[in-house]
Each structure stands twice: as structure tokens, then as C-alpha cells.
Figure 1: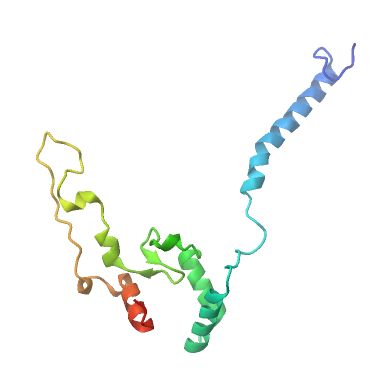
Figure 2: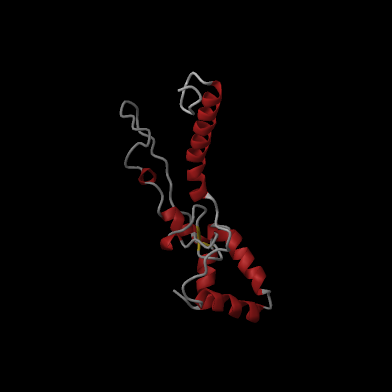
Length: 155
């Protein structure tokens, strides 16, 4: 039975077996990457065109190219709504409006001063004072949500 592809004593058979095994191993390792590859198309459009109409209206009202508004909003938020919660940098919506007071009001429970964040009961607990500053003490760039609500009349 000399010359069979699976005969370990045959040099050509061993090479063929090694090549086949290598090709299979490579295919198995590369297969998961196919699912992780980005799609070739553009970002999926929203199910309704209300957002597109809002951008068109803003473009017409403020004489700013719609493509510029879309580009800036995409760079700011990647159009991820975060299910109504702020992004990791504290912004809301496609224009990444910020509300620092709300973000500071939802600080960790350690900020209340009722327990030691170190979890160390042998030493006196640290009780830092962490109170939300008044809105007037925050820079304007961190309070855009309130101003946008005033301008649009939305709550």
C-alpha cells in the first residue's frame, strides 16, 4: 500500500497530508474573521426618515450644507442612541448634546460619603465631599442640552 495519501511512511503522502491539514487549519482559523469583517455598504438608514428631514430642515434654516451636519453628527455620536442614556463622554443624541449636571448627579454611591470606597474598615473612612456644582459653575460646552431645549422649546 505504498503511495497512499494517508500512508505515514510515504514522503509524498506525508507532504500531501501536511498540506491538507495546514489548509484545513487555516480555513478553520480564518472562518470566524469572515463574520467580523465590516459590511461593504454604508451605515443602515433609520427605519423612518424623520431624522433625515430634521437634518434637511436644519440645513435650510441655518444655511449649512446638510452633508456637513450629517458628518459632524456622525463623528460625534456614530449615530448610536445609547437607548436614551448619555454616551461615555456624557453626550446625548446625534449632535452629542451634553448635560453635565445630570451626569454629575448620577455619580457612584461612594460620592454620598456613607461608605468608604476602599472597603477598609480598619482605618477611618474617607468621606470626600462630592456635590454637583451649580449649572452656572459649569463651562458652557458641558451644558448644551439645556440650551438646546430652550432654543427648541422641548422639555
